[in-house]
Amino acid sequence: MGDTKGQVVAGNRGDKNGTIVAGGNGPGADVNQFKWPTYIFVDQEQSVYVSDSDNHRVMKWNKGATEGIGVARSQGHGNALTQLWNPNGLFVNTLGTLYVADSENNRVMRWPEGAKQGTVIVGGNGWGRGANQFTNPIDMSFDRQGNLYVVDRRNDRVQRFSIE
Image (cartoon, rainbow, N blue to C red; front, side, top):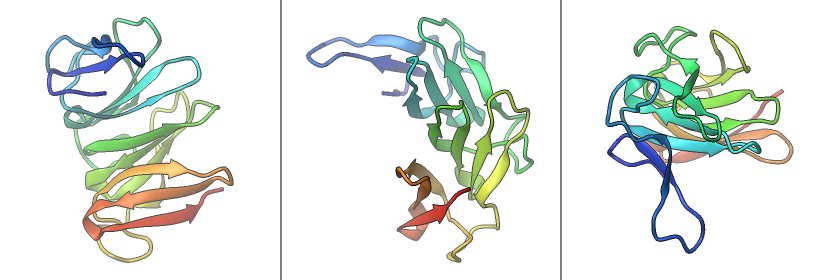
């Protein structure tokens, strides 16, 4: 779980104390810090991916690492394909492809492993109530058929998309 101290804490069932697995060095923008971590995803290798919302980036922390790796690293907030603005919900598939809800840009982006920029897979058409628009997408999930479900927070709805 994320907290306001810029750290991600993990624990086992029954543990009364968690173990810091990412961050924990106060709020900031260095590779060992977060500034408002919001969502996490843990892959099969126990790498922890974190939406670092106020730094407009997604960081990956390999198991046991003391520093994160920018997997969707923004050059400040903006709407270019190299930028995120308040990233939130995320998902990483078995190929290492990152999907992220880019909330203030009203879009969901795909970042293949090692990519320098992402691609918009849904949204990105300004804010609104249209079938191809969002107003603050906050989280997402995939079903077994590969359909993408997006929580469109300020439109009070969940939309489903067929993604190739």
